[in-house]
Image 1 (cartoon, rainbow, N blue to C red):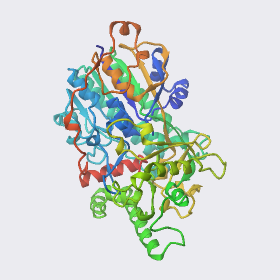
Image 2 (tube, rainbow, N blue to C red):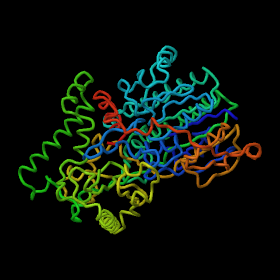
Image 3 (cartoon, one colour):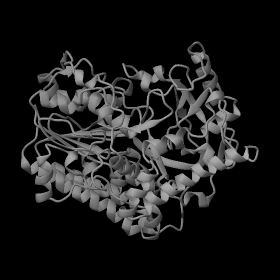
Image 4 (cartoon, helix red, strand yellow):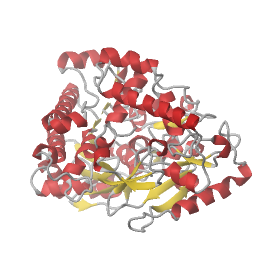
Length: 578
């Protein structure tokens, strides 16, 4: 067995790392790529943070572990609730290492709130509510480590707080907040490393994803959102954040130079277009959805008034989340019944369910489709006998959808959920998933139909529409190709790896730690990462899965209290996911 450092880079992309390393800005990444094994890492489909990191932790696809998005549907209702570790239906890598007698430290990984008891310490990731951006005792296992860390290092910062509309006027404010958060997290990691020699030390930084959403449009001169006159500090935002992550990697490796290091990201990154698609508007035009209220002039006066009230509530919510001081924000937002209820209304409000066969959640990045199915949805109209026919009709319509400017198809492929996912949790997934084409290399944006007055299913947004809290965080978008690197310890090199997937990492880490791989894990051991000496002395062994009856129960009605929902909602909006 070799000690192992697992270093997570949220949204890390070789499309960024390689050119910056060639410029001498990332010496630690450059050394690992030159001396170790490196390559792309396939994400989940779609490449979203919560399902991707849960696949990493369980060795299963989302159909096996049950996490598909930042939200999950409330059974029997047109509603959603925030996801956290309570929604996961599988044992984690951390639990398996602990049961194998390994000492484990886990810091900052998403979908780990509430933290689980392990043989070591855990600090939850950005699904942890905490107090503002600071983690509280509920985010720590054991809880006593919270007091110890505050005494020795200070507060653990979950995510940076950056308002991009203000940061555009004062670029140093935004970049400074991100760099300060990275530094505090690194101080936490170094303190934990000095506390004892861990068998597996896992540390994750979300700030690369945070910066990618915000600063890609300033970094990439070819981006349709690029602003040539933007301050140099904004154009250097993404390289500065990656350089800080590179320094963090070097410091963590230097703290335990005999350990091997495995570096990975949950997905890759790329730029976003200036064109937005409105999926429910398209479904309406295809005769598969009807709105109860509409922004068009043909809608009834009462319907337009109801819609105007709902949009005004959403704008008040945005003001409350971004401008009001904490003392005023909390009571106002609570009085508006925020969190799951408002998000449910924004996603599904305004649809006439009596005349709707297929609808979308219109999420900001990867909108999916649901059939309004009898017996599942509370007002479902599609009989189970016509489910397959309805899916096929919607898929055919989507495949024929074309960009009016280029005549290129918007959609590469439409998948039934059974084509993508396997396992006991497949029925919790959307009915149809869309593999979108790119617009000259850039992701189409996703908009909400009832908040758009154009009545178009696709249009190019005007420049002034990007000056909003929502659009300021959407200059970059996720890609399916993440990063994978390994060096030292049991690992070999130099070399390249091809065809690796997120589900392969949990089996690979268990193998590196001298433990068997449970039959429940779908991934394989990535033998290409290891030295010939380690492989000749060790062979992967599959072992029977231990029962975990506590994970089989239904998810709780709500994963968060009212106060916690407010914090998580603000954080997801800051990240651009709402």
